[in-house]
Length: 461
Image (tube, rainbow, N blue to C red; front, side, top):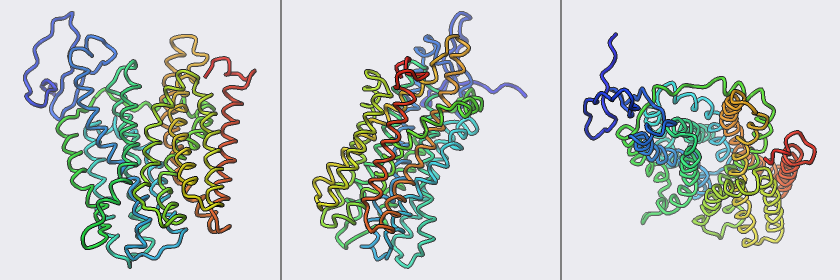
């Protein structure tokens, strides 16, 4: 078979490539199907001669697609509180099941979605994963207009929203291939922030779009996504590229699974990212059930401040150390949960809102700080270039595993509220249970990474 003809990556006008001088570094080039065969962002000359431009061209459609993925993932969090008005008769337990199931599915999909990028190509998979969001969006628009729909069918449709949760993993994996190590943190930070903001955006937009002159139009909560999903797929098709050199690094996952710090950090990430997802999903329903006189239009504030606080966690971790900031985050989260208990006892909406906003800010800071710990933890003891290379692979695998396991917190927190309400008729036991878990997680962080005399504390993680 003959080699494919190469063309420049500029999609606005492909031209035949000029033969480079022997001493020059190849600029990025692509073949039909928008596959780039030579990609070396660590080479300064390559990066300057078109590499940066191509990477940035791929980043922004990726952010938009991930933003929509998070928004679809979180859509049921703001739809569930409206179902009673639409004629559905659901128990508290059933409401929290509909909130929890998308997180369960999304967390489960994160590992296979990571490996989909090397298998199908980043551009191709972004198109596919974006178009897959048409399933949960259209199914949501269909079932919410039929109050006689069985709970089992509602549960299936809610589970489809989990497709949006998998998008985070594939999007982050894809963008990581495009950027050099020195710029990867910023690019991945923008990508992650764009996704997290999708949660706040859907909780802000749905209460606005579903109200019409003829009353409630809950089907618009699904319909509004359809043109945006098509646009995301078009932008990915038009602007993005596949990297043939992107390979699934199974050794990185193998190295990570055999390292105890992967599982410790994953446990901590359930408390930070899992709490962010879990509280984001449950907060609108908590507001509606505990303070029905309050408009749901403020529910987005929690996810918003949590998303915006995430970069601050990384910045603070750079200054003070990821472990210290993570410990402080768990302490603040415990304080916020205690405040929410007092607010429920006093029926104080102001204290309830303030306590949850404090919780959300702490989860966002904890997200950034815990992720910042990962490369630092795995580099401890990497005294040779060979060990450093192995450590980087293990750290990359840990990031994927922790991201998947942490997302299960989005399932555990709503189910915790449901069980607490069923057994005690109150949310207070669940919140006190969360306080206990935050104290355990904070103590674990201190004992492993900060306690004087521990094997790793001298590294100042």
